Each structure stands twice: as structure tokens, then as C-alpha cells.
Length: 156
Image (cartoon, rainbow, N blue to C red; front, side, top):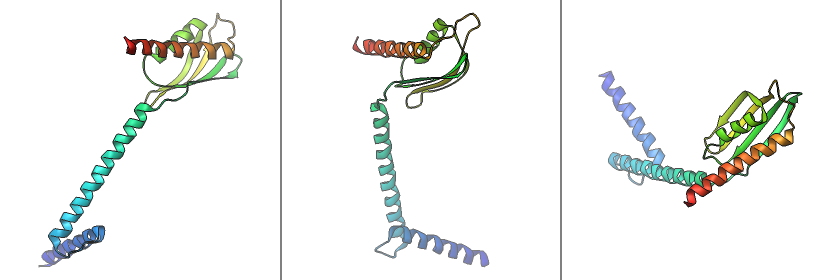
């Protein structure tokens, strides 16, 4: 007997909560439930619309190319790169490091919404100390060549 009463009070409490959610014009139980379901459906449609807008913004987002090099000590640098994603940018940058005789000590790369890389690079044993401007120019050139290569592939 007590369980029936508990279930009924729990059910009435839930119905009252549903009625407060949608401010019903009718006190009928079925109308309240239908109104709440319609409200949830409207919220779902709005959420899907917002998600579509967000995806379109991400597709059309263009960020400026940015390459920063900071000297840590005599033979190590911190390199930060940010540009639009696509292509083999990481491979191009690593090839530049190889050409300049630089070793990657530590790196973090992300391609979620755009390409970003933060790396600690060191000068190799048999290599003379590189200049920050040389590193910046070489990385920018590699990124530019990569993006121009992508444009050519899109055109043909």
C-alpha cells in the first residue's frame, strides 16, 4: 500500500515539474506531456541549426600565417607556427629542420581547427648556430610552398 502511494506522489511530482517547464494552458496530463515533448523537439532543432552554423564557420575560417621563433639558450629555440590546416605542412617543416641541421627536442602539433605547432628545436652537433630570422624565413617559405601546391591541385 505504501509503495502505491509513493509511486503516485512521485508521478504527481514529475507531472508538476513538467507543467512548470512549459507553462501549460491546460491541466490535462496528456497535454502537458505533449507540450513538453514539442518543446524538447524545438530545442533539438535549434541545437542542430547552431551546430550547422558552427561547422560552416569552421570551414570558412581563415587564419593568418604566424611563425615565431624565440631563443631559449645558445643552441635551442622555441618555434610556434599557426596557419590553415591541410596538406603536408608538418612534413614540409620537418624537411626544413633537416636542411638547416636542426633537431626536434620536443614538439606538440594540433590540426583540430587549424594547423598549430610548438616545438623546441636544437642545433645539431656539426652545424653552426642558426639565426632566428633564417629559421622563420625557411618555415614561412615551406608553408607558403605547401599552400600554393594545394591551390594548384585544386585548380587542376
